[in-house]
Length: 580
Image 1 (tube, helix red, strand yellow):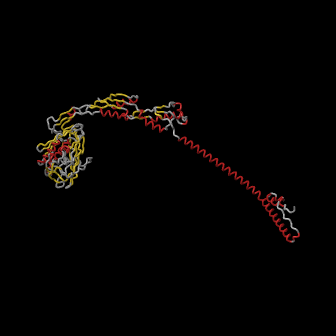
Image 2 (tube, one colour; image 1 turned 180 degrees about the horizontal axis):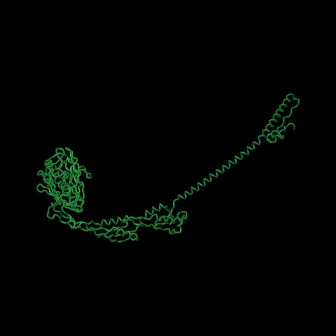
């Protein structure tokens, strides 16, 4: 047994059992015979030395292993704790992920359920229209598509002033109570589906009908009823006809032939509308309505016409033109003679005369103003006719719609009281602003132009005065004139207005024409309204404030009337009184 090394089993080396085991069974090599000599001894010694080193190494290893064993055990215990912590964290993470997934699933499920559209329960109908299984929007569309079939077949006859007016359901418009019907059907469905307690209508659960059939009601639109009433009124209403002058014969002893007025008719609209509304409210389908119609008498009776149409004004002027020029004045006045101007109507000089540039209309060559020069042209002289009418219209208180002054002031009228004509560019237009007809009679006797106007004398005034004033005089260039009209009542001015503004040229040695210091009208019979001249109004010497647009000087290539005589000198101005 001495051949084995048993040092491994020493107490110091017992922990390292694996190393001890390997050394335990390691057999020592047998000694060789002495006969081997030195060689055998060296071998033996070498083995002993190796064994000694192995033993030392083994001991050293065992000591090292013995020293490191506690540290290894601590490391193992620490590693196990870390592994347990890692496992716990992993498990917690898995649980958290699962919890989140479950929560998200639940939320998504709830959201999906909340977004799921409401549908009506089975066998739900509205006025026989099946809406079961439909969403609210689908049901609404279906009701709208089929609502026309729910309207009753109406048969309405309106008797008005001897006429019959027939109406049916197509003549009206309707307002359906879609929301009300669908709300009732929805509450029923929620209750039937067991969802009513989750809504704001939970307290109404006991009041909700158990019947699945609902009714869609409608009303007739009031605007469509008014439309029907207007249609009846249009076929019923008739304006009364005022008494009037049926025939006007200028300059005759009996100038006027009269025509009596006629009553009009007017539908009682409010009464017919009440009848129709009551008819629909009762749910009826047929009815005949006798509409109430009122008689409307004329505003102007025959007595009013005979009493109120009187001579309003007279204007005359004397022609000093050539025979052809005076002839043209006569043709123009004859064309205007007998004019009847109805209430609110605008009278036109050019409409009466036609084209005054044509010989075929009876006009001849006479002096005209053409391109600021005096020349011969067809229709020369007619401006004196229009001027005479213009002044008579101012005295008759007619409204001036259109008027133009001459390039140079005329010798047959005060400055600011002339009216030039150039067909079709320049016209004289006057308006009747009264409720009665106005009548114009015109003629030329010898060389005298006469114009009379008849019509209604407004009681707010009893006389008219015209007054014009020259201002802004620029020697050798031009001057301006403002013309005003004053209405009097019992000798006092009650109204003042600017009727026109004029600008005249002073070129080619023309002088400033005399203005009107104040001339009063006369009636058509020539009677002077005032025996004494009333106090004259003060006229400004500067440009007055007015909304009347100033008349520009005519510059068209077509002719206007030329002066019929040389301009008077300042000492000859008194001769103007003959023209008034």
